[in-house]
Length: 175
Image (tube, rainbow, N blue to C red; front, side, top):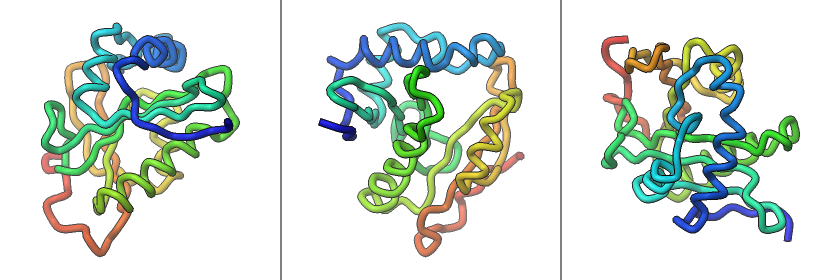
């Protein structure tokens, strides 16, 4: 069967719950309070229901997931753009480029080509030892920061996908 991408359904909640808890275990050990790190089944179901949640499957098993919060949804990102969050890869498959493959597919095929969005944002913890640098290597640029009361400062990053569509107003005020 190989690898393929699809939208998650509520029937995937238990498998996504287990995947997320495993993938986010290092963040819990670092004391970084990401929602996915301590999610229960109800929060996983809410994520699937309220956001665009994709999974990457290999031979019928979910090996990675990423969700996108929409500007009109209950938890919009900071700039009125699609906002990537809840990104997880099966920790037993680390270092094989699975996460990079999923993110590249979501950024280009979905957000840029299907949705025609000029850019995408994401947020991560200032205390995380390598995530900010990883996203910057992928072409993301810092656009602001905010204390959301989670015990760390959230660093917001943006990646321009179609500069011809980018309009002013997609900058974070009060950096």
